[in-house]
Image (cartoon, rainbow, N blue to C red; front, side, top):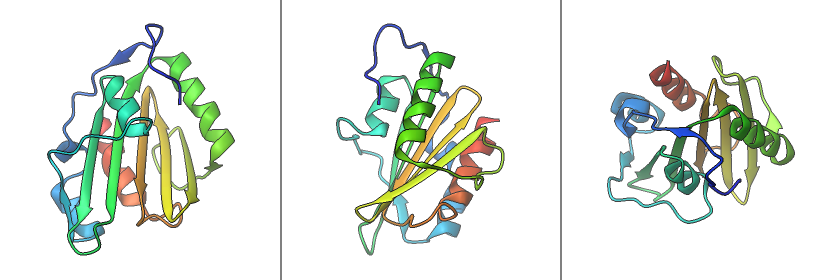
Length: 149
């Protein structure tokens, strides 16, 4: 992930976690997931990068298994989006799973799946132990894409 620099032009996302993924959407995915309001992303994660880029970082936690779903969204300049796309190509597999996305990627490792989605100037990353294949976060991605339209 590129380190935020003065050359990155970012615009605030202007959406809350609840606007990006509604309570109904997360409930339909798995009713045991609840939002964590006091969560701070770990350094070096996509969520930390998104917040450095004036974006949004959200976390939901499963009250039974303690698995988490992390969402990050940042609105970035074309050069930064292109750099992030190139990194996604190198580290993930291009997938046609996410309707409405310009490009979508998925990777899985160490029991965690990551969906990386690009639409217009938005960089969207969803990560969870609940994602074993590209289709697993599809409804969550669709919610985010709808909110950003």
